[in-house]
Image (cartoon, rainbow, N blue to C red; front, side):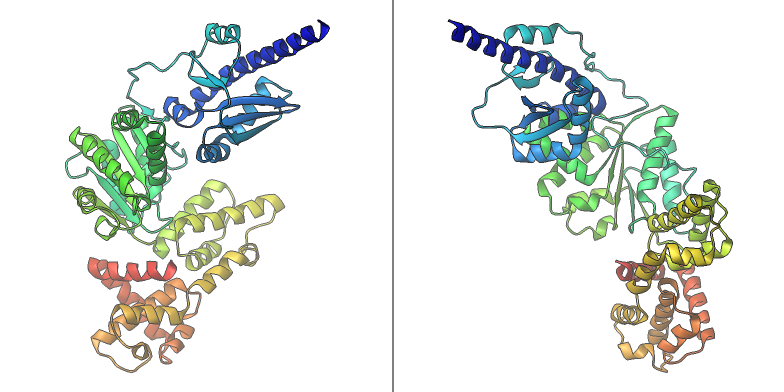
Length: 487
């Protein structure tokens, strides 16, 4: 009889523990839902099953390895923090794939999947006051659709964007869209350019301005996130909800569209979303590393629609723009950075603004940490790895070869005495790029081009700069060569 009572006590204790865990998990889920949004919660977290507690570790189960890996990478730390806050004895969370045949039940209060518990425990979880669920008709004004979108970076505004000739047209287009969404001729707005030139900054600035004005709902996400959302909706059989959520926004911004190349089903969904939003008079902003006509991996019907609005190119930065960017960042930091250091950085780091700002931030941090002034010698020491990488990245020989191939001339023409325009112009472009992309002095560059004088190189740089300002097609050729050499 005693043994029977002990067995009954053990079962009762196990059921009680499950009941307590169910209540704790229900509270945690309410917190998660409030933090990540209804759609994200339903997509990734609702299928979690609570397992046993072993000393200071609790096990959570997910139905597939894909979901397990995604949740572990995106929410693992947060789950651990929430469990520890709810039950201080729990310090670790282990995520595993659900064992076949494991019993579980779903709490009707919030759709939380928990291990089978007593009816009393489920009723207690249901009766506990919960965070109010989102109403069906959410206000669409002045909101970021956090259930869909990535957060906007508060640093990226129009006020912090440094404008110069390479990006002034894209900046003007972005301002126009922010002031008057869905203006004729500006929907969609397609921004394209190389890595780190400011496309993402402008997209965040558009979103920030629209939200500041308090007029529309905004959803910003990368093309990769769009793809993962779509895949998750298919897996959870909630594609209709995904479509409705996405097509209910006033402004949809998709960054790095080139990542949809080769993803036919995702392209199909984006195509229909694009049409639905444009037909409803909603604004679309898209960015990519190439123009719509050059995104050969996209479907023709999508590529032509992307090109039917306003297409704005962000060119590679000029020396003057890089100086302006560095001056603005240095001024905001409160650290005195000598002009010769800024000029040195602007000459050496030409690939993208992101890397340029990163180098300056590193210098400023070094100055603050050690209380030392920023000098040219200190710059070369602190940034030796970055500077070495840039010296190694492009050589004059590479430039000569690429330019000769582009204009279909012989490599030997780069150092020959021929003065025909068909040869002289590419040679001048090669000298210009050598000055822009390498740290070689003018005399050194001249020696690589048939022992020419440094004044010849200076003339070539000046002439190419003038032609780029006068002839957009020629400028496009030069910028294309620059991107090829820097990639």
